[in-house]
Image (cartoon, rainbow, N blue to C red; front, side, top):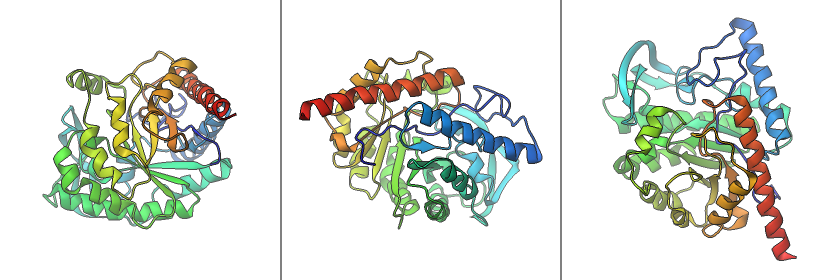
Length: 345
């Protein structure tokens, strides 16, 4: 993109109420069979138009065709039994009933490629597709086969690389790996987390991104944040490693967080997808509030490497609020763009 401060969303957008229950994670579909297939495509088409109408420059699918950012990918893999479920602690925050790894994990067919091709047909803007990262995948499962988080992560990294290469061939410009688990398991991030992430991105010509946040705006996550003290310094562990990695873009939570903004300096030289919209608060940011967050970040990242975005996915929000937040994101980025242009005049 030639424009500075191109805007994007991190991942999910609220689904239409006729497709799935609003403001709910893992919301069950309200359609079945051919109607569900058609409904997913209609929702994806609407999501593209809503992003475009509100000035979002890098368009995503809004995860309209999947129930959850991790499990929808996993359910298409061999070696995972969704009927055999166990309760596990997700990122040391809340319990969830998850499927079980019962054998060697494999990807028999592409998972999201048809959806990505459909997205590519809907817009001439750059498109971004999010995949779960290896560490976050293993944290959303019960492993009854490998008995090794690291070994399973490497298996998933290989599968993700296969999918990412097919998404690239389908016309995706940016492939994002979601790794909220990086903010929880810092020792594993150092030992093998970044290495498996790089394996997932290996050989891609498309730009690659890793998204690390403090989670959706749900009670389990907001309660956890309340325990983290006056400064959230988890990025201090992963950013130096990512700065030296092959990943192109680092996506982080910022607005209304307690993340010290100077931590962005730790990834100097990388592109930074900065969360300037709070997804854990229904208050719609003003464009000036967005602009203020971006101005602060520009102390630590060059203007041609800053991508304004949301803190995390917006699935738990109402559609009206989510769309209003997107409008503010675009308007705030436009304010700063004009300021930067005027300063050069």
